[in-house]
Image 1: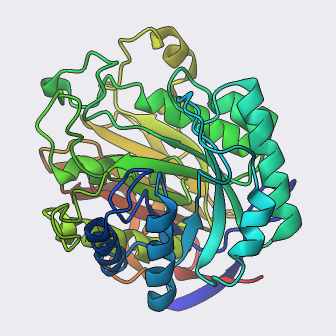
Image 2: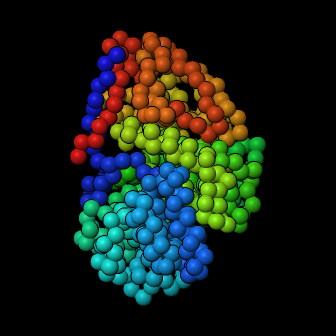
Amino acid sequence: MQKKLFARHPIGNPDRTWRQDHFLLGVSNPGPTGLEVRDPIRLEKTRRGVETAVKAGFNLLEMLWASPEQGLEILRTAERLGAKVVYQNLRRFGGMGFTKKFLNEDNDLAGTIRDTKQWNCIAGYYVYDEPINEDQRKVTKELIEIVEKECPHLLPYTVAAAKDYYIDPLADEVNPAQLSFDSYPFGNIGQQLEAADQLDHCNLWLTFEIARKAAERISAPFWFYYQGHELFYHPSFDRYTFAASRMMANAAILYGAKQISSYVEFDGYVDPATGGPGVHFEEQKTLNEETANLGNTLMALHCKRVIHDKSVVLLSKYKEEWEKTVLTMADSEYLEGELPHRLSVSEMEDEYGHRYLAVLNRDYRQEIHYCLKLKEASNVYRTSEKDGQETLVYNDVLKLRGHLSPGSIALYRLQPAADEPYTVEYYLDK
């Protein structure tokens, strides 16, 4: 069978200079969190933590809430290993939206950039964490412009607060290079969630839709932090398993994310006692490997719409907004009939008109078997999470059958059955 090669191109907000050319797998901080960490033992754990993160397959280490001493250890180790870092030093620049704590006397970001220019591992600067008011967003925009002036090839990074929906103001007032938000429902006490319902009634689905549309509005890549382990400081509504993390990460892919980042507080994939591999290390490594293998294709795709089965019903104060936003199978361009329980689909396209269907098992307890009715007879190809290659799995069919383990995703391409079969592969054209 013929393989056809198609060019894909770096993506980015046209009003910003930074561009993204590959799928990114981030981790919120590869060392123990804490702005005042100076303990030599903790710094040794940081070194081991960076090594563990790289072994787990993370390709972007985000220096979230690190002390300058810890940050230097992250830089040294990342430089040695050839890893990439988003640098932060809250004693010199930036801020955190939900704290009134005085972090630095002035935003000496330009000076920080000049003082760190020798580090090849720095991929960007973390200019502000969750700016929530107009003044903070103004500062964030000013810091982004400093990065663009001093080092236009590096990322001026910020993240929106999902709480009370600060995503749209960040997009519209700051116009960032990428649009990122986070959500940690296993430990989120702001919603009345029940174990039997899993995340069926979680605000996450509405927030995904808001963020996807905001990113599309400014033509910026959409990024997402998922919860990488159970958070100790809030009781969970359900017993946490890593399949829940897998599901949340894959849900972001469903909405067209071009980066997913594991939010951990030095736990989960990493052992907090040693900095070595932790309880979820192997599962996290597998998730990273599979996502990386799909990543080349995902970078070429645009999410047109996401449709859930009927079990997704918001019960919170945002119920009315969700009902105005939610799409149903009547809106589908590719499918007809009804979706199975806890199955979600995303309809995507590349710039050449190739149609893709991503299928997600939202259930993080049970595997799912599905039969999807196609609107037209199709040749169906699946992109392998093992090697990223495309394989013809069904020829001239009106039904797509498959099964998925808890929290897993499958990526298919749908080709009209009348067309001559061929596989697709993308190459980066800068």
